[in-house]
Image (cartoon, rainbow, N blue to C red; front, side, top):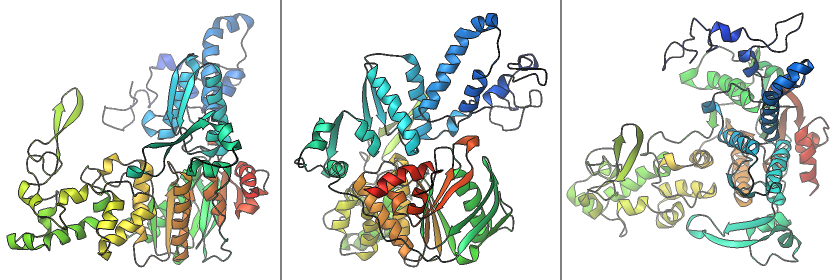
Length: 558
């Protein structure tokens, strides 16, 4: 039933040809007529949610067959409708669960809850609007309000403006992040807070919601530094796309969920740029298009996605940005370390010498539980400090290496303020809104958005970044208004240095701040894959065919 030869293999099964069922099961068809047999169960699950819904609606059954099939049909129709309501109509029914994004998986779970029809339940959702276009957002909000109207309570952790406006009650936690947060700044009914004459609570979130604060639209860059010309783009739902990408500008790649934005960026743009600009992948092959020109205007390409910054718990913001190398140098230069003849390697938890060998510098010991998940317990030799007792005796400004790794980035910036090599790297992490992270925080505990911002920070302190094209995939995920404002300033700074930045984005504050927009659509899945609109935000806002333009119009009028 796997459709492949073995459990850990990808070779197609020769007997069923990947269908995973016996021939007898595949000979049962639905919706046939004089011209065709109809669809078997594999054909049906190959459809998108929307296509499957249309297919069921068009089934021609006799009155007797309708009565027999109705209990099953009703369940199918309702479940497909729930999935459409939460904005995943572009997914195929046989899509593997491990290929879904976090937002898609969460919305599928939400759709299954809608079908249960529970009353008096408490639902807690963590940013369900991740990866959703404003149009799909409206449908999700309607779904949540219908759940509430059934008699349920819904708590949503959210930064999306439309979702916050749809809420009845607002709880704002802050006022800052990390050590500066953890307090309830304001908690009250939303209409009352919005209608009050002044914002007495001092809540920054409320300032933006009331319109007291807003993200200003920067001046547009009119001139371009050449362009990348793509002709005959073809991958997944993109069939024949011709597009010119202007260089030396901030470009927003927009469109409804599943329209083909990621396909365009990853499968067409990034693969071809990598083949021209990166030695490791260099080839004359043109990927997923008939022609790809204009790379002579570029020197390098950097894809900043939401993949982890390190695959092991040893990687952390300090090691990724290179600050830890200089921190170890500072410890090795102390009189105590020099007297003992210790080099910088002594202060690394990756090599033998100064680290605790009982846990090999991890601070934790993995206990294999056979049929249960591995359990991690604090090392009882070093007490989770990762280094030997002797190593921790060496201090720099009365702080051991363990103390430094447990500082927040904000504290470390103040501590190392007079050492440019460290301070500059930490400043770039502060600029991307990561002041609350610990220097030694394990990379595996960072969210996708945090990992992406650590990567942006590591690019910011590069001295000579010119003729680089940066490709970012939804960098505003999990960001507050104030952090979005900071991020826009950083992206603008990268462009001011002579680079090109392209972002896949649904956040309208970022979209309105772009110099140029490429809007892909008009729908998701098979209904997408074409360039609906292009130009400045003002030009796209005037395009009636663009869903992005319709929502952008409201934002630009503010």
